[in-house]
Amino acid sequence: MARSKEFEENVVLDKAMKLFWEQGYEKTSMSDLVEHMGIHRRSIYDTFTDKRTLYLKAIERFESRTDAKLAAGVKQAQTAKEALQFIFDFMSKGEEGAPPGCMFVNSAVELACRDEEMDAKAVDAFEKVERLLIEIVYWGQQNGEFADRYEAQELAEYLHNALTGIRVMARTSVPMEKLARISTLTMRTLERE
Image 1 (spheres, rainbow, N blue to C red):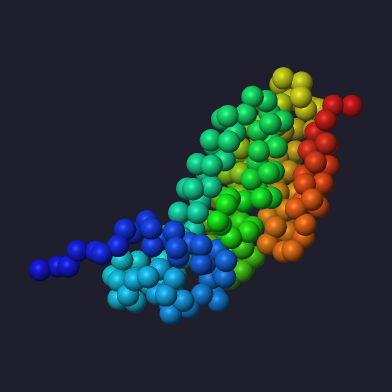
Image 2: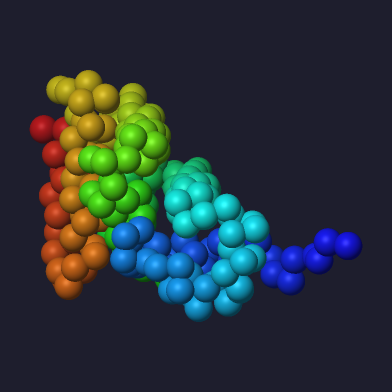
């Protein structure tokens, strides 16, 4: 008779996600995962197969949570500027109780150059953010909030580059005030002359 799981899979996956997010893939050992997730090594292997598969599931969990938070924040915005400000604030400050920075950016820096699957996941996630930014910039250009001297796609690529830098800096001891200044100046590039 098979034993039933004595843990909620999403709960332990969230714990693994936060540990990987904080420490990275290479630095996180199976022993770290056993201790942090609060389940037996055998349960990790039975449920997630191996460390790499667990990591990929953690990345997917991070992506779905982040996508949902971005979509909800943008949907609540009354203007394109508010939507963009929400994204910059979210990327700078993160979410309460979560490690700083972005798990995708961390993963791209650590693994993309030698892991094709991780590279593909990171590129896909970055393109998804750029598509969201294109929609917001286009919205702002259509209603007169943003200048239209550049194409929405060009501006989205520029904004995404700034956001990526902010997500890297958010992992350091750089003061939040500096990240806020960078965000403000970056957003000002969209203003009409």
